[in-house]
Image (cartoon, one colour):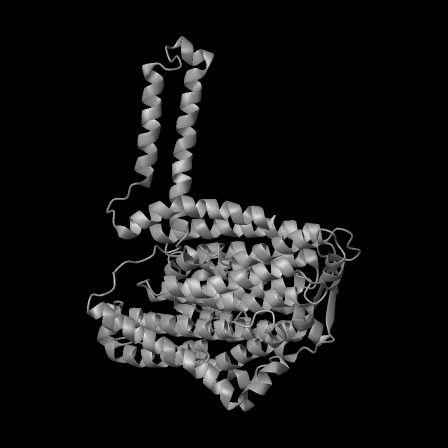
Length: 592
């Protein structure tokens, strides 16, 4: 009975706190209440650690009938998510009390936390969709917390992509649920494996959850959200909520049930493109948070590779799922620690910042997969899982190693950018007390792989061979060499000092969208001049009025494509915009 109560409290407790803040807004300014909010993940953490696998909670009155249960995969992800929310909330405690928008911050925080934990626990289709939507939409007030123009713009992109993702997820679930006799997720993959529409449903589910996991082409919301949200919010976005998307993919796609060779190949290709493309774009950024955002896109690209391989070759599904779980837990803890460290560095004086930067390099070494770190366990587990598909793609293992070099460059770039960011003037005079939450996150990153309930594949890595150690070290050495060469070339002014706009493909797409909007308006005016009513007013076809409208149309479209300070990068964006748009249309047609 106590175990069932803990599972219920994991979701019911933060939801009750959110309702309390909404009904009694004055309580949000109470310092003691900020402690209650930041400690809200504790019931979920206790449940994840103490509730055995056999415990199941049936809620027949909820939605279409709901069942909550903790299995091995969910346990590892729930522990990591609860720890990230707890540590980030600890660091957000002052903002919970003193921020101008503290009420919306607390409500959004608690509801997003509720949705995140609900996704980790629920075993039915309707519950998964409801909790995932609650988590995604509730994060919007966290992204736009500062209410600056750039934060609001990033929030609009986040909201638009969230709506797109929810539509795709709902479409995939509806297609997959055709013929489903029970609402349980365990039966969904079986039914989907026998469905003639399995490929379409899997494509919708991959792209829908892929919005949250920043699949290349659907990633444009992430860099802006990470850049303009407070670092502790970015920690939960990249350390906890992104793993909800990973779990959604694991429990809805028919992994091991049937083979999808085309979709699996596309997923592997998208993963490689995200892993390397995000690294290339990320090194041009000048904000540490933006670089870390592109690092998350790159890491999620690496995670898509074993997922696509499991769809392509069902026999490797068990090993791939274990490796993906380990990779997600590792990335979540490391990325959360990195963002919390960015927050500490920005509030530290010059002396303290140097020590913070050194410690962040240790965190970055884990992210790059240095030996004796959780990153090494994750990367070796991924390589072992892909051993059976090495005959199909013999270059895939080497590609994963090269991606680690890109991760190393991104880590060094993020630390370098952070060292150049301005400090808090008040902190520069008196220094700040180092948040205990970030220090505890460092301990988790350095020791968590030893005691967290991770898949058994993680236990083999301390005895890895010398060859494995070399395979982990040479990409890091290559990344350090590339970063050093780039820094020297930059000091010698041999490299162009240009920056890809945050959101990369979002820039040409926004230009295209703006130009198409202007074109539609002008074409409507031209069409109106050919109407009988327009002719009565002297707007005959071929009349001067029609020529003026056409000229205005052309000038307006050109003005939409013009920038205030044109340069090589802007000209490149304008020239590739039609190509990008056409390529997107072609890709969609091919996939369909």
